[in-house]
Image 1 (cartoon, protein in one colour):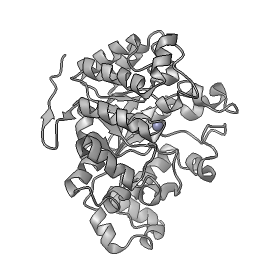
Image 2 (cartoon, rainbow, N blue to C red; image 1 turned 90 degrees about the vertical axis):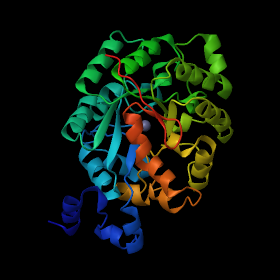
Image 3 (cartoon, rainbow, N blue to C red; image 1 turned 60 degrees about the vertical axis):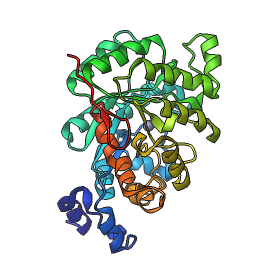
Length: 357
Ligand SMILES: [Zn+2]
């Protein structure tokens, strides 16, 4: 057994001592980092053992492809001190609108198979929460499929509205939010506003498509949903998918106006220590969850959680304006609360939902 394997096996999530790491983190920092629990609120896995093309093959010299499997992801989480992650599953067909031309969803499907991710989740429930992301209101049986996922134990649902041709407030999603209320499940919305120049929600009316092309029009669709379902906890993936930095003005406004919304910071425009501190100042630390979009960003391979550009240590080490309490909220405690379909009013208060049977 190699030394590194030994340390991972005995140490679980808190031991970071690998051959590569020991020279990079001083002892003091290792000690400091041990006190933080970390949950990644945005992660995917893919079965890249299939020798078929994917849309992320070229990312970081192939590191994303190499590290995307269940086994490598779990290894990366353990090396990086990640206690748990929100595992989001979508099929090749769910994301077909943004797959490059050289990737055929029919041929590439085995890489994205949801069964592979579900099995990983079922075998590792102590490490993953599961968010199915297959809700296409134009597909017959989509509500029944979601109900089955909830009965299987799914922890929440993700809406990838524009990839399916819709806006988040489309009537087809309303029974989805209603079901989340009934089952006491949280909802992640990725409205993909940043893609609207590339592809529009083409199953909406022309006038709705036109209105949603402005950030004001787009955030209005979010506000409609948030106001309509106050007992459901919502998270805006990628901090609301701002296309340009100035879009955050409207996104932060809608987040501030509604107590039942939070966000994950995965792959957000402008991401960095300054941006992060500004976000917290604008919406409050209780509305921000650390998230990464693993494996799309693995600039440091399996050590990305400690050394990469979306490392969680940026929050603990490079954000002096954040208090220790705020750092703990962002790294894990807000995710703990969101997963229970609870939302924060402020640092200390929560709205507790009644479970409607
Ligand atoms: Zn993602």
